[in-house]
Length: 589
Image 1 (cartoon, rainbow, N blue to C red):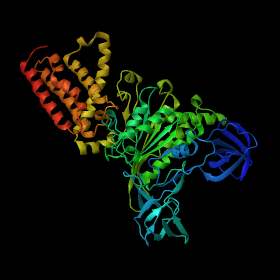
Image 2 (cartoon, rainbow, N blue to C red):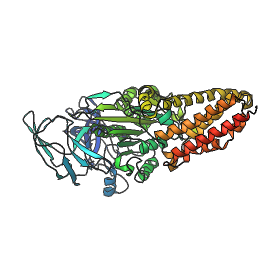
Image 3 (tube, rainbow, N blue to C red):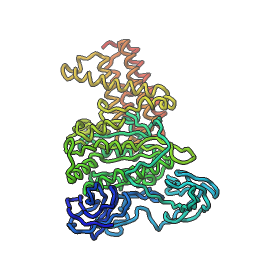
Image 4 (spheres, one colour):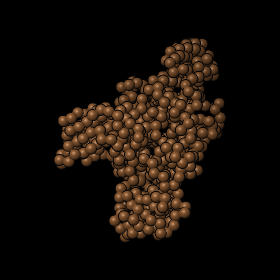
């Protein structure tokens, strides 16, 4: 079925003669067969967003509908892949056309020539339902790819055999309950705007360990949770996102570069193959899928890239893996929505964004969660969604930030004043929050003892006291404070500089496990406790500020990973002896 173009407005094309087409159908526009998607229908006229440059396209050009919605190919070969917003493999396109993407180019997302070693886990005679695992492929050294029965297929296996197969070869024959034979391949397709089904959702009860102390200890995120990283230009959103992608203890990472600068995506592409996963020792790319839709690529594809990424993530979640989706940034995606909405002449909402902005954001974040997957083996997978938000001028009262904050349960608010002071990650401990603290507390208590969360609460109260005392200091100076208040300021400074501050570009400090975080924070709070006890006996506070152990605490985060436990115990013993010696002297202030 085909129609004719009547209007071209940037990425928006209007065509007549498509009465039998449906909303969300993929179409091919013009002689170059540009890829587009139908946004709405009025009679036989369709408004189409084209995912490629439309220059040179004019009225009269032929539009052909495929009859299928925008879908992604799911199967072996996704990992280590670099795709654009509509899942075209950029590395393959570069080999075909050079450094720029030619218009109208069609390349399958999964390699049709490569043979994979398929090992069946089901056998002839087994009854299968959608979601059951029938076999595995060792896709990378880090991930075992599980081949699942697609939706709509259930019945008895009549043929299945190990061997070398391409993604289009039949690996299993199922005699359906309806009497029909179903030939199963290792590849399945799924429309990106439709959530992949599951049995039921569970409450997230395990934390996501990112190796970032301010996140893991102060504002933890649960596996299967949702988080937002808002902040003004230059406050370190991308570095925080990169750190989460590098070090999070998940099985698969889907990184969506959505409308951000191309050089940031280049950093990811250059860095990830060289980085080693702290859990497996393998390169990080072995468990990563990259969706690159940078600011100079077509705007309409930017809107699709978010859905492409989260659909791929849901596919790995359905295998029973823990998956993280990192979107950088949802503000650029919202701007693409706003541009298309404006061209469609829809009634604008706040600041020109479409009225459905909040519901679209909710649709994205609600696809996260801990789920019982389809299939008879009762496996559980999780999908964690983390989105960066880039509010203009750092103003979080704008619509994208406000809509996101109503949906997500963790808010890591980046602060430009911290970034200018070279405090990274520049997450403001006074404005950030995590609503997972109560549900994660049992896990922390079981694995690290009740003192872990007690120390976290104590550190937060000290930081809040510091903020109140700073108001007094600005008025009358620090010398007017009592010794206990001066100690509070010193302890807060240690928490900020020796614990919360972390250097992403120093190997030892880039990643910090939970045990190390617990011991380091314990050292600082022990210092505070010992000093307060010494103050009651009239000890000299200034002398306690300059003891050698105080300096060693400041350098404690640089101790090598395999030596920190003994080093921290040594510092604790030294600190106790030095403070007790000062207290025994009983010198008055």
